Length: 41
Image (cartoon, rainbow, N blue to C red; front, side, top):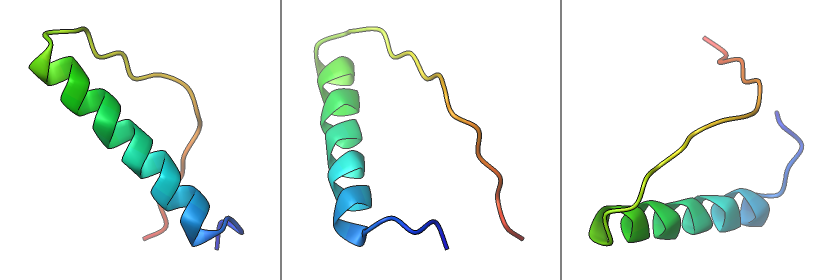
């Protein structure tokens, strides 16, 4: 649907998980921004 390889999506998710874990463990700020997404029902 998005015409993006599964490996690309998994790499992005893995990176995000590592950043969130680092922020939580080391008491860092988490800023979520950017992008425009539409969910298909």
